Image 1 (cartoon, rainbow, N blue to C red):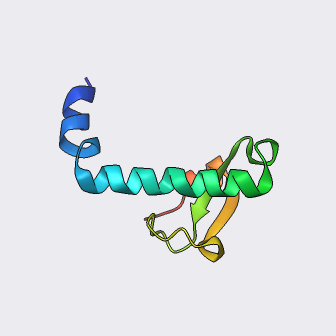
Image 2: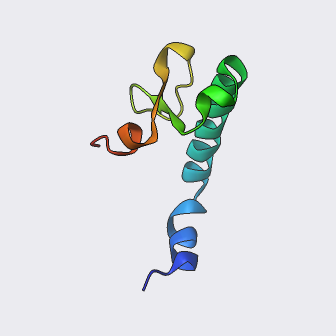
Image 3: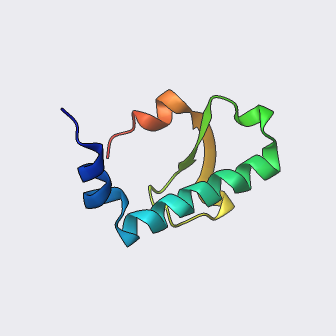
Length: 73
């Protein structure tokens, strides 16, 4: 059985992971502000270089959730 408490303590709670998550959220807010909420429905913001901390506009693109979440790496 999956232990969510342990998962949080060992991964999600770490400062490095919290920083990366905050950066991913900033990227999404940036693109939503530009394109609008309706355009983003069912979509993800993809970091082209796979670096969650690089939120330059040239590194962000809008892709379907299935395409973004099935990328290798």
